[in-house]
Image (cartoon, helix red, strand yellow):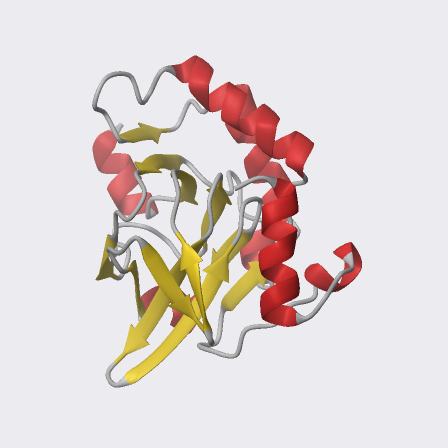
Length: 204
């Protein structure tokens, strides 16, 4: 999805035609769920996608790459740019902020099984969404909150949202968002997390 198409989806869903307004979209839901709309501009998205392509992580049929520590320079820059968006002062000052990275490539219509990130990781999870829109569903018991992620959006999970709510993506060619269907396309996500200290020490 290009920037113009992403803007059109925002206008349809939120009735906004302003970049400033786009960044102020608030989602009701679990405590600790935060979405920074349009965090990466189209130019920065293109640069990030180019940097990921250089890594050749998705050569052949591969659709996932996982790295522990030793991030490429672009990933270090990405992590530092995220730091100021965490609400928790403890998270914002953590060093390093992240030491584990997962890049996932989704084909149109592919889903993500509902899950809570493994307890081997500390609080504070960041997801950068690229290329295509997707609706991420958060569930806890019979409660459900849907979040529309557009290219360049940043999703942050802290506290309750990180530990108590499952999140996933339904496997379908288009997803329901409010009163509309949003078509799925090729999508890449970059997830950044930090191992618990006791787990990290076991791996070094």
